Length: 229
Image (cartoon, rainbow, N blue to C red; front, side):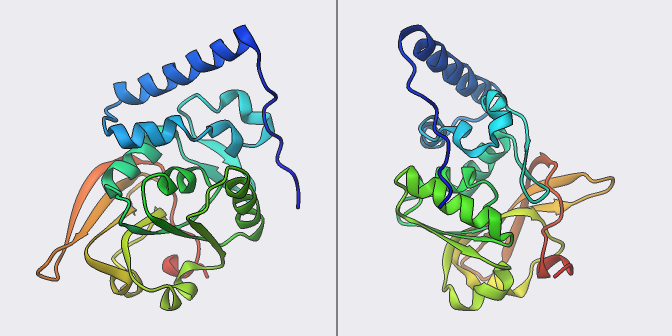
């Protein structure tokens, strides 16, 4: 297995600067409206620099989207935090994540949910994600490689679903895998490459209630849900 480059131990002044940079990073998230203490704590204890390509490591604590392999993008930390707040994860929850990417959101979710099952369509990303989470000692995540909509029938029910991409409508496969009182967070594609992060709640009546959260730049989901697979 390819070994991940970990930051070298930093003595004294450098370590203090790193702590200050992390604090400034968290304060910027708070300034943008992130207020859930559990989410902020999960972000604080998940080193973003371990999830970005080495050449972008000095940008890890800036709240910007960053390119990752396979032509994909790691979303800005603020958007990941908004996703986690919208999911309202609890230790009793089982989460399905569609699109593991670098594994950054996966690692944060793992600190909030009881179990995370993450599907990644690109084999290199799935492999690297597994390696990162293993080295961080994250043990409540299963990374599956493949199109989530091929895998869903065998995965059971989930309390929460996070989709890292835009989907039109609400695929039957997602509706069927969502437990009573469950929540789906995904993007709704808009005009001119705009999208809206959206929360869909499964009501006791059986209805699905949809509410917009914020604008985002998530592209359409790759795979069968988008007609591309």
